[in-house]
Length: 189
Image (cartoon, rainbow, N blue to C red; front, side, top):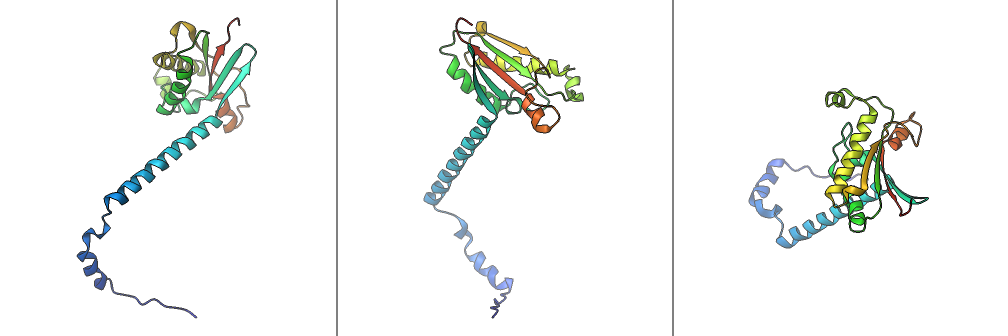
């Protein structure tokens, strides 16, 4: 058995729509509830982004040091050494934990994959992955200083494509190799 809907001409509906132009408006309480729901969704989205970011950042205990590794894709736009807002948030969080109690040297090391430097970077004076990694390490170092980390206990070094942590033969491997490592040595190291 098939039920067919009666087709109403559009002309018959238009006068009803015209009579109630304010029917689409919502009350202040409904608006406030929707606004609160939107803010809650934004907070959940930020938390999810943080969790995704955490999956691409690692902390490791070494003998006499702690090493924090962050995927460069989280810190920098592709083909750039200027930190992204997301990168600044990641480093600011770390700096807030270090700045007030820092007594040990902190070393920022930058690494890249083995992909050749593009024309846009070459126009800006970056001619090798070593140059790019140095500029990225220095950018992180400057941002740490701006967040209160002691400049006299901070240094930066770029290593380019040296010391890969994964094969450069796949996009995933290259992504792992694009990283910044921040190492905090313990006293006496």
